[in-house]
Image 1 (spheres, helix red, strand yellow):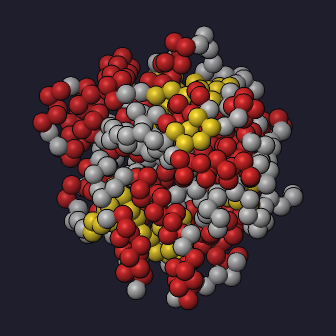
Image 2 (cartoon, rainbow, N blue to C red):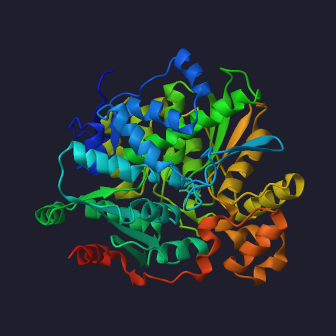
Image 3 (cartoon, helix red, strand yellow):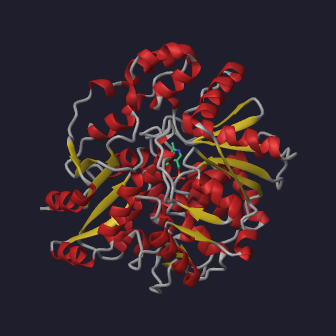
Length: 496
Ligand SMILES: *Cc1c(COP(=O)(O)O)cnc(C)c1O
């Protein structure tokens, strides 16, 4: 097979192999690594996917992108990633309730979809380091809106040759998310709350990455930076797998005919999850529409409907905190694609964004966005959907999933599309007990998140997931809170 190389969306041509791109995380000109082509899957191969389980699919798909890894190397990584850490052998079970299907991506160690890729990434990185003969410690810098942080900590804790620093918005995550991070054990981890929001954290982490002086200073001490955010292609590619899996599951159950198109409704923040769906479609998965669902920070919804990306608006804290984002990193990869892989255009647009807080794409690019439907849901609508779906079907959604479901309902009103739809279910309701139980009944508002786990379990008959069962009793290990301009010095102190 022809080798795939990775280059920056903003023009820097280094022709990196996958292992180099995974190790470095982000391109040195501030752009994101993109594969020089999206490999395609013909009908015969697609047909063969019908008989594969999640791990087999994962191998078939990752080998198409990570062409400098051997099958054996990838298989080892995949076996280690998905070995016993997931509550279900299926890894990502598909559940049906009412008129939609839910692809449950939250049965991993931290109860959110980011586990799927972040269980694999540490193994990809270590293998990459071996392939590149790298004898430095990899420092994973991570900005999180709540879920990436814990998933990265779980994935990398006590992994030799790595260190992890996680920055999260002190006032912008759920109590369960916060406690999950602050209680993280491991000799190589550091967790820091910041007085700022996710965009602040992400911007500053990117700045630290691209600080050449610091990079050189650290290299002398035998450290290199990398990223566990979805800017890393080692995060993005493993996410493609579950879209194929969800599709094949519908075929296996006779819900659709092989080749029939389906929709996915995806709760979206940084555009990583839904970009993987877009890549899946480009590879050959029969997809009709991708429903891009925003909460009230609806910058993406507005963009898809107008061609103008305008981040100049108030940052809102919602009940779906992992989507509280105004600067959506992975959109840059999409822009790159619809511009006809024109790095000059991307660079100009990204300059506009950092200089003026907005950019506008041209008509031709706009026309290429028609795979997407952009919608949003308010907190009130999100709560209503949680209640409605539970009352009608006894299926309990977390707030992020509910945003996607709510947007799907709006889509049905806007169109006469009857295509079968999978709602991508990104978090367990047990991670957001207060918002979820509060949506079912006001009287639960007097209880705290941890008390409500018991209540949720009683009301739904679901068991409290193991990873959070004992969380309320866990000891807080991390207690640093800093300002945005102190993040860099926190990193330095940790590495001293
Ligand atoms: C991160 C996250 C999202 C958004 O995914 P993106 O890839 O950032 O668009 C949605 N739901 C949950 C629960 C998440 O953790």
